Length: 340
Image (cartoon, rainbow, N blue to C red):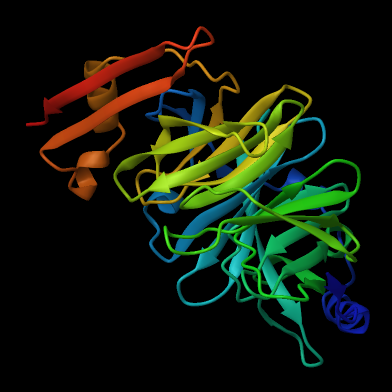
């Protein structure tokens, strides 16, 4: 991984135009939107939160990446704009409030939107690493936040660029000062992961093997990956040692995206992307999650406004749980119910 030239001069000029840097503290103080407790489908879901009505419905911005600050109180969630651009929402879980900060590329004349998919996000102390697919990772320093007339902006400082082809679909903090990135891919594409220093340099390449993977984290017991199954199919959670991952089908909501790990509370976080089905979710780490019945699943989905998006007449889910420790297969059919 090669570190590109630092945009320090451009960042300095941007800050000078707007009265200097303000850093992250005022952002966390001025959070202007309310997060509300919600419910989301999925066998591994523990708790869920929803954005405000505007952000739930907005088709111009789509949530993608998620990361947890040390201590677990704050989250960062990246979004990409269909018109070009990206932003990060900082979430205070204790106050249940959040606010948006635009990601920008500083230039000699000012700044322009940071046009990336932002499919993954890694928050490590003072820095944010934003996934930029084939271009690597853009690196932002949180001390560089600037308040403009249009709101807060966070300029990118430099980029970590791969020396060979690799799709940086998602990223998360790894052990020590390292990062772990992975590829999203269909059945005929590569499904690799990359471990490397947050400062760049040599990287370790391996296969994760999960089709349509959306996020990855490493915990003490191995790897965990999310995988999506379209706008209406419940997502999967793959867990286990590298090379022997096991899939939990129907574990997470539809449209599941990136994955984060809160070590202070030993829990997983993920985010979902589709309008009116946008949740922040905590998930169980255990391979054996309790089964919920069809009635509660279909009824609660309806309560969350899914019918506005035209849910099909029958909501189906048939799950096979991972093999039990004794080698037997624990199976549970969630069934089907017609929604009137």
